[in-house]
Length: 430
Image 1: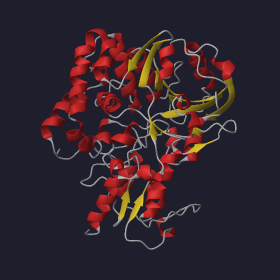
Image 2: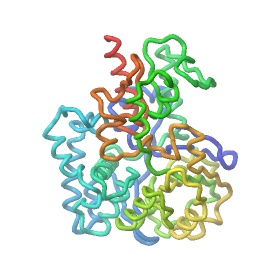
Image 3: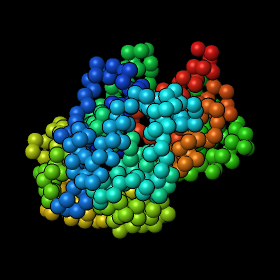
Image 4: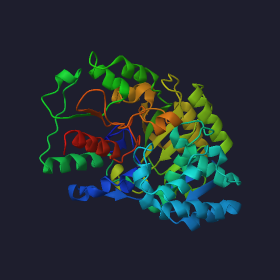
């Protein structure tokens, strides 16, 4: 959650995350008075759109029925399943945004959701090109081949969030979320220290409990010489997923989308049909460069004018690419944008590139550019990071992991830290 002037002075770009579907539907984040710290979440007219071709797109409205109208023969199935998930969300959120491998508090609701969620996204049950593509684009946020089990859960989860909570952004940039969290912590008497590189757990001051926002490998480096061999073997088997290759643009005008409906959407998926997305995601998973990688576009300044000088715009774009890829995808991504928005290149007044190596340099948790903190394979989704009664605990007393490598995984929801803190309090006898 960092915002900076990456391209041209006056243009505010989000270095990592830009859209935050989970910030407003998180059981933990909803308990914090972040609005009192100045945080304002803003919503685009449409949460998202999926562009099939330059002229043809599937539009996601906050209203389920209105969205379903664009799905033809799949309208009834979309309304039925998404309506059930959205209505039952209060019974699902603790299980979905927490460790999966535990007894659900609402077993019937979870079982009904699980019937559809456990499937591969390619077996969603949708028949029309529009519905299949829309679902695949949301399921692709898993960074997995779409024929893997549980990839459907990402599709249902994100679409349900779009209808129940929207897909908002923080006014002024994602930095505003970090600033609000820091401000609230300060009001509670907390202290934040930065500028010190921690090489070992021995570098830390005396404490009762330690929560580490690290991958398993990062924890192993800090705890070297203190961890049992069996745990270290698990660390070496922890798999990281594909990477992101990201471009930020400063534009002299709004995106000249060939389909004018796309300007209404905060997030746009450029992926084509389900089959095309599945091929691209399989390639990035297998370490193969694909000529048309799945690409996500966010146009924050369309619904938050504070991001750029008056009349000008920012554009945030990234593609799924192989982990640790050294290929320059700049031309590939720009060609894709030009295809859907002819004349786009003429508007570019500034450009900033983040390769997988740049992501890892920015945050060592992004191993090889894996911004999700670890692959979402079935094993690592159900038992994240490793099979354990308490997924946040470690072999060291009083030391807990609280990163995206723990349940429920990546996203601005605060649940990894919240649940790790509860584990720490239980260990402390609180």
